[in-house]
Each structure stands twice: as structure tokens, then as C-alpha cells.
Amino acid sequence: MSITTQEQIKKGIKSLNESEQFEEESLANIEKVFKFSLKVKKEAKKKIEIYPAFEGDSNQKIIQREHLADFSKIVIKEVFLLDKFNKMCEIQASFDSKTSGKIPKMKEALNNGIIDFHKIQKSLAQNNLKYFNTLSKKVGVGKELLYSVSLTVFKPIFELCAEVGKNRIKDKLWEKGYCPICGMNPKMAKFEKEVGKRVLWCPLCGTEWIYQRIKCPFCENDNQKLLRFFYIEEESPYRVDVCDVCKGYIKTVNEQKKEQEEKTVFEIENIKTYYLDEIAKKEGYRKI
Ligand SMILES: [Zn+2]
Ligand SMILES: [Zn+2]
Image (cartoon, rainbow, N blue to C red; front, side, top):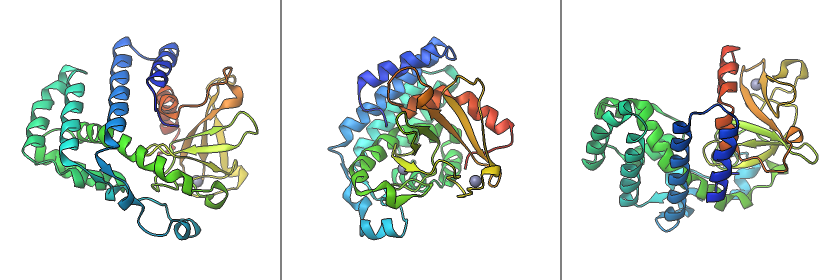
């Protein structure tokens, strides 16, 4: 579930605060980004055309296990993107002095048309991030900053698109480890409270889909001896599932170990468990 209300943002920030991992200032920055994303999502409804992204026969695509949407084909008004990129730059500028020093260059490139929105959209949609290297040299700022600003602007638009398309997917028919809407690999999973169904989460468009409990979503290995998981504390609802065939890992929320009945908001859980990404990488596993 992606964030769709102010209330979810409030609750999410509260729960991040309670995890005692974040300084007040970082929490304020996270909150700003969430609020910005929500605003983009609301305003984008009238500024984009989604249907070109769903070209072709959806049923046929599902049968062939091809993801349904091509986000690079969403038509988005340039002036809308320009406005949102500028606003996101201002938000980033308020984070720290190192970033704020880079923002004038970014703004100049935006307003001179050096930053090609369509190329950015395409590279994010296809998870081919080479364009950010090229752009980084052209603009003279780090690719991380360019990527982060771009993703924050485009992600809410991709989520909108996914919300339109999700009714076309039937989980039983899909059964793949990659996102049925955009094709991206999942970043997190959960075991649902009731029957413990395993649900995967796409970090690009927020889609959630059911997947087998004992199977690697990246390489489809289902040999139990080569699939393991680890956790930091036994009572914790968080664990990391790893595959010793492809060395991929996925962070998992076990809702059965959660005290409250609350639904998992992956956007929040992902931030709350950054420390698990660090540990997984140290153990020799990687993001696939
Ligand atoms: Zn997706
Ligand atoms: Zn694997």
C-alpha cells in the first residue's frame, strides 16, 4: 500500500520516531518528502494521460507473464514536471548546506531545458539508470541528487498509473517474482496476519501481489536448503529472507508478530528497516 492520506503520513512519522533511529531533523525532511509526493499524486490526475502506458491486450500479457504497463509511455505535461522538479529542488535545498549548494546548478539546468524529462521518465521506468551518469556530467551535480529528485517527482505518477491497472491482475495467474504492473523486482515482502499469505511490494509503483512462501522472487529457486532468513531480535516483526543461489535478499514484515492490527505501509517499513539493508549487504547479499 502506498501512502494516500495525510493521516498515514502522520502515523508513519510517529512510528519512525518511536523506532528511535532518526533525528528530529531527518524526520522533518522525510515528512516533507511524503507530503510533496501526496501533493504530486493529487495534482497529477489532471495533468497526465495514463492509457498509452497500457497499450496492448492485458489478458494476453498476463498469460505470457509480461508486465502490463510501460511507464515511459505515460503522457505528462512538461510544465507540470518543470514546476514539480523546481519545488523538489527547493525542498532538497532545505535539507543541508552541502545539497543546497548544488541546487542553483540544478535549477539552471531545469530552466534551460538541459534536463530531458522524457529521458528521465524512460530510464526510471525501465530501471536503466545510465542516463543519470550522462546527466550528472552535463549538469555538474552528483547523480544521486539527480536520481533522488527525479524519483520523488515520478514515483507518485507511477503509483497513480499502477492504481488504475491493478484490477486487471489476478494473483493466481501471475505467480511471478517481478511486479505485474511495471516489471520491477520487489524490495520488501510481508506475511499477512490471517493465513500468512506472502505478499511482495514493488518499490517503484507500490503494487502488492501474492507470491509463494518458499521461493526466491528473483531466481525462482525453491530449494529450501538454499533459502534462509535472519533477524536481529526474535520478537521483532522484521526479518531478511535470503537466497544462496542468486545472493538476493528481501526484507520481510511478519504481521503475525505485530502487536497492532495496523496494515503494513511498506514506504514506512522500508525506511524503518534501512539497518537491515546494511546488514544484508555486509553478509554478502545484494539488491537485485
Ligand atoms: Zn511496479
Ligand atoms: Zn534467488
